[in-house]
Each structure stands twice: as C-alpha cells, then as structure tokens.
Amino acid sequence: MISSVSSSSYVYNTQQSFNITKAQYHEQISTHNDITAKITIDKDGFYSQELNDLAGVSSNIKIHKTTLDQLTTYAKNTKSNLNPIQALSKAWNFFKDLVGDNIDPDKPNMLDFNDISKMPASYCSDGTIFGALTYKSYTLEQTLELNKLDGISSLSKGKLDIGRTNLLHSGMKTEVELKYFIEGTSQEFKEMTGVKYNKNTPKGKMDLGVLFASFIHHEVESNPNGKVKEVKNYYEFLKSGKSLEEYLNETFGDNYSSKIKKDFIKRSTTPSDVSGKAFDMLLSTIEKSSQKFFSLNESFIKNHKEDDFTKISNNFNFKVGDFLSLKA
Image (cartoon, rainbow, N blue to C red; front, side, top):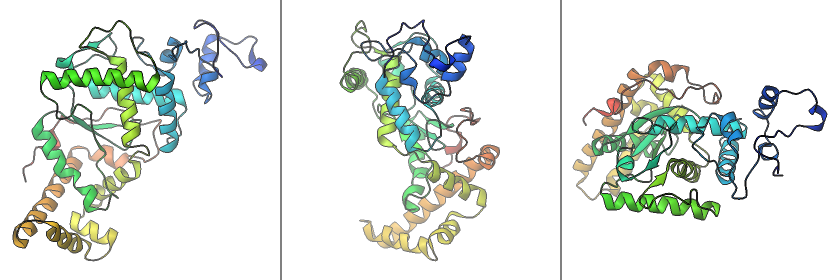
C-alpha cells in the first residue's frame, strides 16, 4: 500500500512508533522487503528522494515504481537474496561503472547524441547487474573480438557464458541514428510508466534517469534469470587449466568436440576442409582469449562466489579492451 505522508515524514510500525530515531528508521527500512509501504510515491509513480538516500542513488535521478518493481522481480528470478533497496543500490553502482568513463552520474545530466556515442556498445558481467562489471566494449574492433569469445556459449550448449549484453544503441554511429535512439528511449519510458520522466526535457536530449530506467528494463527483459551459473561455469573452465576441447569433452561426453565440429561443417556453405579449419580457428581463438582473460583477472575469478551478491565489488581491474587484443 502506498504511503500518503510527505517526503519528510516517517511511517513506523505501530509497535515501534515511540523513541525511534531517523537513523534507526533508515536501518529498519534498508532491510525491509515491503518498501512501498514505507516510502512516499507521488501521483506520477515516482518515489521520494528518501529512496535515493537509502539506496545511494544520486539525488538528480527519479526512480519510478515500475523500475523498482522490475528490479525486485529480477532479484527474485536471479535468486540474488536482495531486498528492493539493496537491488536498486547494486544496479545503480553497476550503471555508474558502466557509463562513468564519459558521464558523471552524480551530476544533473541532459544527454545528447554526442554523450550516447561515447558510451560502451556492450558489456560483460559476472552474471547479473548486481555483481561485477567485467568488461566494456567501445569500438567495432573490440565488439568483433568479443563476438569471437562469445562463441563459447554455442559450443557449450549454453552451459558456459562470458556474461555479455549489448546495449540498445549498439551499432548506431550517425547523428540521425543516435537522435532516434534518444527519442525512442524517452517514448519507451512514457509507454512503460504511463508518464513523462521530465516535461521540460529539451527536444533531442534525454535525462540520465531515463537511460538508467531503460538499462534496467532491457537487462531484465533480455536476461530475466541472469547468467550467474553459466558465467560461473565459464570461470570453472578457466580455473581448470584444461584446453577448451578437453573441457568440453569431459563435461559433455567423449568426442563432444568432434560432434560439434561435424555439425559445424555440415551447416557450412564452404567446402568441408575450409569449414573444418574455420572451426579449429574458432576453438583456438576462444581458448587464447580465455587464457588471456584469466591471466589478467586470476585473483577475481579464483575468489568469485556464485551467490555472493551482497559482498561483490563493482570494480574489476583491467583495461578496457585489453583481454580481447589477441588476433585469431
């Protein structure tokens, strides 16, 4: 049930309505799952700034109930064991790391096509947007290299995954395309929530809060259950020290790599000897890139825990594009 009190008021459990401080109230609510009963929502469905304070979200961002509902569902589906405030906090920190190279999320931002063009085209995580941001792809070359490494998902029947997600503007380069993206994303927010985020946003620009809401919406839509187990399996492969062919055969049965090679050749339109060499090159490329990735991030991967969402830092220490600099 939505509270009707002002944003400066506090609603307490009747058993605790006496002698409770603001700090105690915030401690109580920060671990409370029924957030909608505790924080004010305005007539348009936006939460008061109290939610931002509790979750550590910048004060210039407005959080709509639809966005928090999506995050709450996502947290349940991914079995992340996070309450709504924790989920929002984790997602915001992830988003800050994602856009922070060129945009300061802690300052009021009206984004134009130049801002969007400087953002990553895709990213990798350790399974959800509640965990660690492990890679950002900016250039076409980086994206193409990432495509090669991403092939491990199909080779393993989806059991291994690098945790990659493409952002919606991926592939858009021209001013016309990016302006269309801005207009479309703002319109999508209105259709999703039933209201405009900001009635005074200039034409051709987009509020950062709209971009954040869009990021949440499309992550939840494209990866509703996350990829935690699949990414963990990929990390297990990296830690095993085995070749990709050996790991696949041990995991999926003897001669698995031979079977998928035959299938690859069968589906190819090129001569069998050419497609066979292409498959071997694909396997080699994925393995070399994976080895490089592991060597750069060995400590993180060895200490990674599948369900440790409340302790994972969003900082992952390696240079953008570095592990994908290898050539096939």
